[in-house]
Length: 132
Image (cartoon, rainbow, N blue to C red; front, side):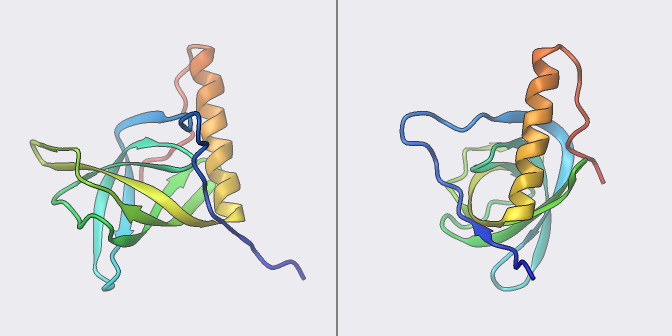
């Protein structure tokens, strides 16, 4: 029997992880430490974190569960909320960094990121990240 392993994403010290801009099309489910849930729109994603559009800011340093859908399947990860970037008309843009993600979820995320990057280089729109 093979048990799933947990991946702990690490930023490369000399270069940032490639980011994919998603706009407002991808919904993300957020579960807070106290069990409350909220929804967000995933604006940007990378192998190490992303940027959420939230109705209201979360506390810097809060740990949350982030879940969203990709063409390769669902991705769930534990994340640390970072300082809000700025307010927007319908909420706030707030970055997060993954602190733990199961290997299968990490594979699905990386596969989707690679798919988007390859299609972007060819000038083709990708649907690797799903709306739901």
